[in-house]
Image (cartoon, rainbow, N blue to C red):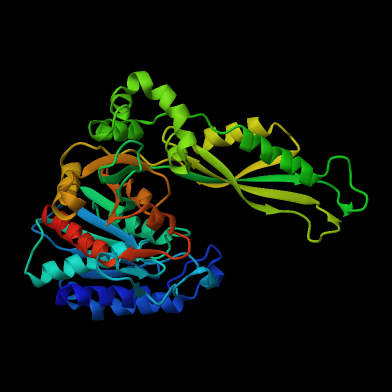
Length: 450
């Protein structure tokens, strides 16, 4: 590692040590770390802050503008500075110590936010700082959009979009967190694949509520509210949403088909024949494959009586639903009501947003992404790297940008193992140093290609 890379790693570790933790209950948020994070950036990236315009939006979100030779069709690079809460006792290394563990190519920084999403945020700043130092002027305006509450409300990103809308800014390409460079994510495909989200699933929460008169648990009614609620939950679990292959998933299989082992090569290359069977098989291949081919619904919260010897007057369950492209909040709510089939169980949509529009996986913006991947993220051993579209399974701040751009993509330029992906929002989140440094090169390549 040369001196420049070593300095970049130390700046990354300093920002990882700032515990910018978001909470759904905003009264629990400590704003001090957010203040510290925002204040640290001009000191760590002085050239960037001298060359770019910066404004603070909605409290702690940040919007930068790097003026280019042309203001039309700007590039927007997105990330977020907030992280999810931690249970420190579950971590092998302190979640905010940013300790480097291991040696050589396997040396990794362990910290909350290492991947989600300070890894991308700091890599973007490093790329811009280097290019400014080189005297580079972008061909088109470049905006950096860093939200402060992506993990909860996403209000910062919405406020940034509102500001850009008022100024008449219509980005030619928007890139936010999303898929990564992975191996083995698609059965039969061993080549490293850059999974670029061209759409993301919608998200909604449905509240199921069953009520009764209550009383002492020693004299329960024949069918208490908790049993009625349990029956409703069981019905939802036993009758999942139907499977189907949405257009972006169809495009994913078509893209990887030439690189797949037999018989997958034929199966993926002939979806007109094999699609219905494939859609039925994929849910058996794991949670990610299941989520690619159907809307998912899972109960995440339960509430009942306030005491163990008290009948619940109200029994509630929260159902988290992730909508596959083609489904809507309205259609999913109607299906849940049909499945529950009990007028005594109230079905209330607490909040929801439909799936995002689908961005094209052809054309100049897509070619810019694929070119940057090929230039900066070489596959191990010289293997060919595939850039493929897919549906992002989780939600991101990028969904707000679909109101002002037709080319919104979701890709984090890091080569991640299955174990590293599993650590997101869990304990022992980490990123290999060499992988993170290559991500800086990707953002440089994308900016200079714009």
